[in-house]
Length: 282
Ligand code: A2P
Image (cartoon, rainbow, N blue to C red; front, side, top):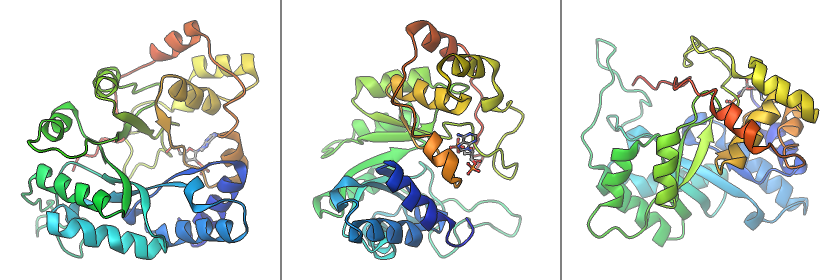
């Protein structure tokens, strides 16, 4: 993000009423997020405990001995004492080191053998130390979740699994599995992404142009974006829409004054194409 735009956007978001902020070290804007939160606290607009900040452990930091120092680095950047949620960003590990995307001379990713369960134990220790109020995962499939859930001596189970989720990728099976295990699904790309071709599979059509979402929106005097977000929260999926535009930041918050009928929910569920925008081919 251009310098300062994240700071401004988070401040507008907090003023609008957002409290859940989804961040990560690899977004390279945690210093701005932290500053925005601290400025709003200083203004008296919010207290620290009103904010729910989610940070993420990157792929190069999976070895257990790196987990706590990595979280401490994030806290130092944020200038906060704790994060509300700390999650393993992806289930695969990269070679530890300064390179965020370590590659060999042939341009191939250099992976690293770590035991996800050992990484998880280090996450549990962060919670015990009070550095993270809760711990969770991201981009985990059912088998990877089961590995953690079935770990001998498990102290805390993941409270959440952040995955791609929206009307074109509704994740029915994973959602049901997570419901059974009391794991909250946090849906990323709830609006169908920015369609940036460097990381998005744009062969799937633009979500917000969908005729059904637009027709339902017309009925409620809402946009397709608001219908997509409402659909997710109404089925119990947490949404983390991204916008750096003040008007759209506000628009994406105006989803608590209408509700979709059961028939409309079914109609939207039927839009599922089972195709990811974010393929994460690494
Ligand atoms: P912008 O930052 O200019 O608002 P996702 O949350 O699925 O990753 O989608 C993010 C993309 O959707 C961004 O490109 C963002 O652009 C755009 N966006 C966010 N809110 C809306 C909205 N209400 N209507 C249309 N596009 C939106």
